[in-house]
Length: 288
Image (cartoon, rainbow, N blue to C red):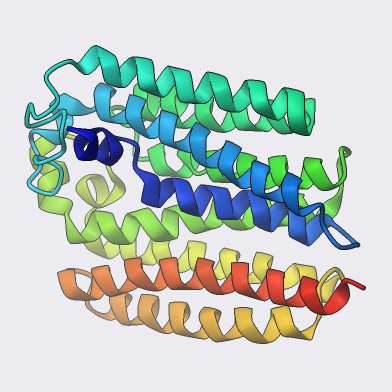
């Protein structure tokens, strides 16, 4: 039973969102970090993301039953017999995260934590997922708010580094989720979810993936071009960017190939991990 509740939290996504907040903090800071505050930032954002994931499982349980990929989720298949407990868990985690961020970090961090959860649960899950192929485009702002939250902990003001990396997360989300959507397009069609591949087909989606990849790579290069980060960041990010671009060009050549779509999906995960590593490594070299 505990494992089922843990699965409902979508912790793997939560770890990526927590890393996005850390990225925003590290990229913005110009001195050695307050490690306790950084750890609390990660845990707080992870908790808010986990709570949002639980609410997403509850709200999407009918859709999840229609897709082979998600039919075995604990709420969809009935392993959790009291869905209301998942709702309570989700709301509790989000409320706790916002309260801790307000009290122990900074009110601006709390605001961005709340906006990230609101975007994922209300804007993406409730409003857009069943209505528009723009769902993952707008829903990607959840990750952007995590970056801005991390940046506001380092400098509680509007500044360039977190804004740039928030834009990076915004362009990354369609590249990531549309590749997965191509791989499972038949299931999205069957579930009547207007993911872009289900609406416009694999070829059009592959072109959109490549277009967003171009915008993503240009945006990711700006921190180096503007002198905000150095050569370590550029080298690590360039390596990931070359691989991601190659995978997505490969996908465009055969957009109906499920294996290539999954390769693009995994390449986007690797790219984001390398960007995180590049930012952290560059910062470690820069800090006294």
